[in-house]
Image 1 (cartoon, rainbow, N blue to C red):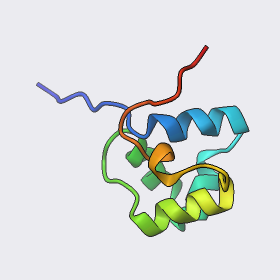
Image 2: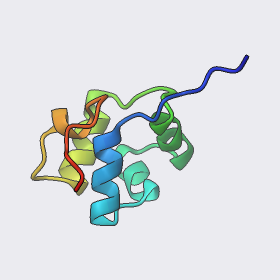
Image 3: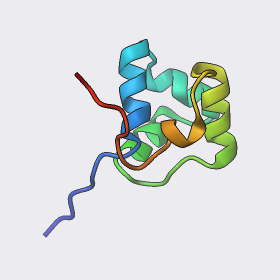
Length: 78
């Protein structure tokens, strides 16, 4: 039986949607391929601290790294 991977980085994905940030923009900020970013979102690998910091600094400078890269959603969606 194949294992189902849970979606990861829900806060980052939500902020991407709200701010119109693409996977390609995340890939550029992290200096990784879009495939790597897609893998992060399905739980295959994760960004290093330096990659997370680059993403935050380039694309979400007013947000906390801990919030953006949390494993569980912490923002209430109305």
